[in-house]
Amino acid sequence: MGRGKVVVERIQNKINRQVTFSKRRNGLLKKAFELSVLCDAEIALIIFSSRGKLFQFSSTDINRIIEKYRQCCFNMSQTGDVVEHQSQQCLYEELLILRVKHESLQRTQRNLLGEELEPLSMKELLSLEKQLDRTLEQARKHLTQKLLSRIDELHGKVHNLEQVNKHLESKEKCTQICEGSTNNHIWLHDAQVNQFEYGTAGSFRLQQEQTTASKGKEIDTRTDQGQSSHNKNN
Image (cartoon, rainbow, N blue to C red; front, side, top):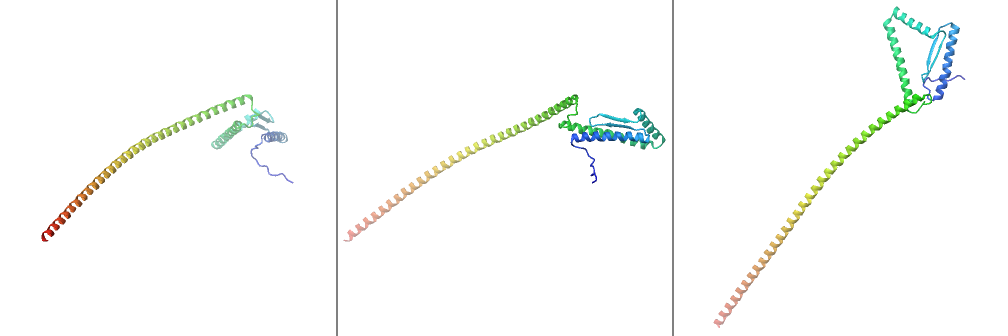
């Protein structure tokens, strides 16, 4: 049964990643050695681990090979396409720098999250601790500022509510005073109406009594006159 396809991506497990790096590094160094012996080639191999540790191999003096590489690049720039070669070289160097920065930032982020702390030295751990202290101090400072701003905002809302409450209380007192005054006016008006009605009814009864008395006197007078005339006729 054949081997499955290996997915080329970062190994998340730290131990597996270190084991894989060690095996593949040794395999790459072995292949470089075999290539230099079998083909009589000048080979220079430079490897930096994620911790920054250097591993290198060279079939001869590595400084001489690097100098030969630089001289070859210089001759290439002199013989043709200088602008294109320099542009490609700059882009490649920039890519290498960005890749190193990216890996460094990833490693720093993992360290800040408490991961991969075992490879760090005492000096690096102390620096990481100071950085965490500064970060925690800044976070607490901003949190305190936000809390104070929120408290001031709430105090302003409380003050506004107190002013509205005072205004409503004063308005309620004025309403009660106006209602009391209205009730007093109504009571006085009712009393005046009752007094007027009582006086009118008394005057009317007195007038009726006087009218009845006058009618009674007229009837008595007529009766007396009739009796007198009757007596004369007899």
